[in-house]
Image (cartoon, rainbow, N blue to C red; front, side, top):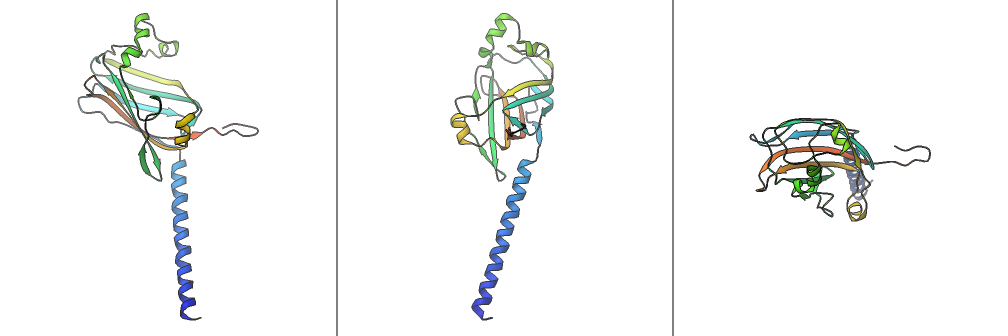
Length: 209
């Protein structure tokens, strides 16, 4: 074997080794992404008004479209002001790198929902919450007074994500979600952050998952 053939053989071994390493990294990344996981943390400040003691989601990973069951408990340290906003920040992880999703139609993604109390005014006028919330004794209109709150297996419909948002981002994968409760001066009153996984519902010939 001459020098050129020996060098070519060494280069081929290096190429094969690189391909194997890249393939292993890709497989590990996919395996990690597909692992059903859920993690949460109360990210509020020391003097926060809203405190989250526990938060559980089922099923995990979350299947869309489908039904998500939420259980949580916490407390409101002091009565919240009537001017409330909810800031939602959503990141999707691609190969472990987070990318913030924009706000689509003020409904999906990293959106700011202002004047929450105005949207709940109809319930306040009737002094009556929807039936699904009455059973859990959850306040559904302002002002939100100081006290404890507890939710067990609250059913939330997760719709199919279509349109431009569905075309922009594949639903399946890992996400980071941060929810902040803000007053009219954008001062943070409470914060909870989560890491979760989403999976599209599989439609089989004989069954669905």
